[in-house]
Image (cartoon, rainbow, N blue to C red; front, side, top):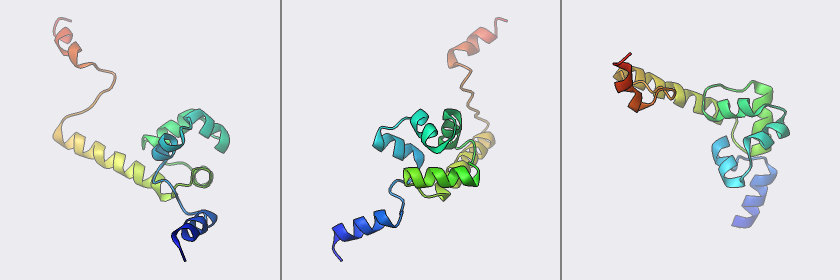
Length: 111
């Protein structure tokens, strides 16, 4: 079987073409809002799934995987990766607070 035949067979079999949702969106130039509309979700849900804050429920995970050609387990891996990163950060004592700007530390001493 030549390479072209293998590729088309893989597409027909539903094999994943992208490792995760972030890669899918970057390569296809799709938006979170359009993806959310296509899979009956909200843009906020898609954002939280991509950032690894939540794992989608099984029905949504299957819709996303089928629509985006990503492996279903990529959602869990992304979540676990985020959780591991947070554990490492909490052990080192260096917490990241996106709401706090670094230049406001000096201003806090004057209050």
